[in-house]
Length: 373
Image (cartoon, rainbow, N blue to C red; front, side):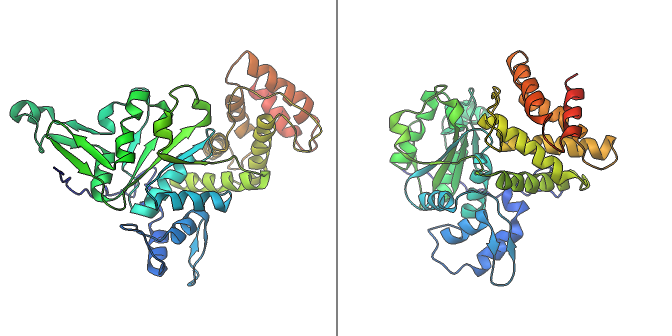
């Protein structure tokens, strides 16, 4: 027999939260979209698919409200992802580390369900209970299996309430635990054999999973599970300008949350960091003339954001407030040289053959040499 799950409320977000949930941080934008969204909405969706896509990609509403872009990339990718959530297929966001899979997953859940917190974080130690349900052992020992002793997982709650659940790093989860999702995604039920009951998914339920390309072979998805997903691959930014824009926007958001003042000179250093990362990642300089060796790390957009944010903090607390090459050099070195033996050779060769000869980069070259001394 079906079993009910008590509705949950979205946790309140304190103004002091270091990283507010998407539905809190961008609540005004979501509310503005909802107020002007007159298009058809799937059951229990807070916004129409068109409005969800607008929330992710950005735009200007008829009343002049500006919706900031959350994802910079091909529009069709977002449209396919949003459309998938309106069907009975689950969504798998696939890509190399740093392609904003988690970021897109969170914002999709916030826009569709108004709640991005129904989350299962995948690790090598993620148990089956994290996806199905657990037990309150005090209640279980005192009264045996009962509804009161059952502890619903985020997936179970999403099924019962018609919400969007999220599973991060799906390929990090052991294969036998991954396959717990097969019945959920195919039959839309979650059996509870201990009680002779089941939870049936109500309209509006769906699931977003993320996985890294680099995790292939760690815990490969079974063909049965992969068939339950529509896979959308998130690419790296196509151009330097697009990546610089992403890094600039995220660094500004993170800096404001950390009360870091804007640093003059930031635009130049962001472009340098992005250029270095792209060239080492691609194995080719931006002018296409010189081949370079690639290090073992991914050198993703997310790592560029981290390097620049760290430099911003150094400049604010131990510098003169101007973001300079010396503020980002150590972060660049740490991101590039993951394997001290092999990567250091790659980095030093790149410094001497590319950075040293590049016009206007002498200060950056000196700062990087000092950081590696």
